[in-house]
Structure formats: C-alpha cells, structure tokens
Image 1 (spheres, rainbow, N blue to C red):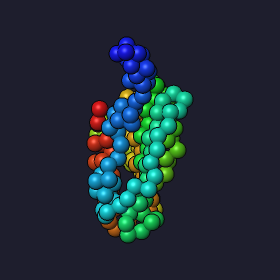
Image 2: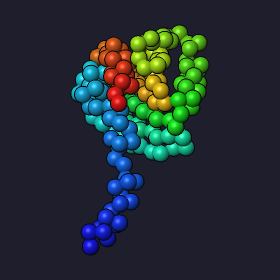
Image 3: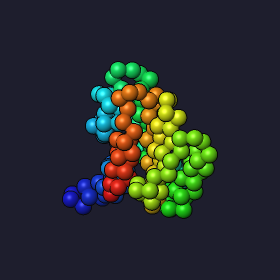
Length: 159
C-alpha cells in the first residue's frame, strides 16, 4: 500500500513546482510597490507562464489615489545567460538614444533607467540568465525614482 501511494504521488512531488520554486522569490511585494508608488496600492493582475526558453512572471499594482498611477513588473528567467543578454541588449538599444536614458552601474550585471520625467520611469536589470523590468506609468509627485532603482536592485539580488 505504501508503495502504491508513493508511485501515485511521485510525479506530483517531482514535477509540480510552486511559483516560489520557479521564480525563486523574485516577485514584487505589495510593500515594495508602495515604496515606489509612494502610496497604498493594490495588486490588480498577476500571472506566470512557461515560455520557450524560460519562465515569466508579471504583475500590475495600481495606486489608491489614481487608477492611472500604475506599477508594472516583469521577471523573466531564461535557459541561458546568452539569451537573457540578447534580450537585455534589445531593450537597451531601443531606449539608449532617447533623452532620459541612464546606465546604472550597481544593479545586477547590467541595468539602465529611462524616463521622460512626466509619464514614465523604467528600470531594466539583468543578472545572469534573469531580467527584471519595473515601470511606473504615470509618474506623480509621490513616485520615488530612488525606490524604483533600489527595489530593482533588491529583486535582482534575491536568490
């Protein structure tokens, strides 16, 4: 009987992974979102998917004062560092010629910040085979760009 139970449970023990297993704790917490937005907020969307070559988790937090004050978060894990590096380079190339682009030296292996100082603030960081993207849209007087960068650094550093 014990053998039968183990045989039936074995596939679930091996092949069922939780979000924590897949994403290694690389999710944005409500507290982190509130630090960035500068106000209480709510999670209105989250989900994960397995994609060709890796995994992806995304979430959206909306500030309590204005539905247009949103924080978008995406964490991606790629099968190889080369794939993550290629994707990061594509993001960087599409942003680096715009005003408001700033390379960040102390987050992950490479990172940048981009803003138009009115509508959005974006941080994209890569460490190994992982990429974190955080974007605030629309900026407000309460939005903390320093917290946006700090939270990106904290998330990419988690193992």
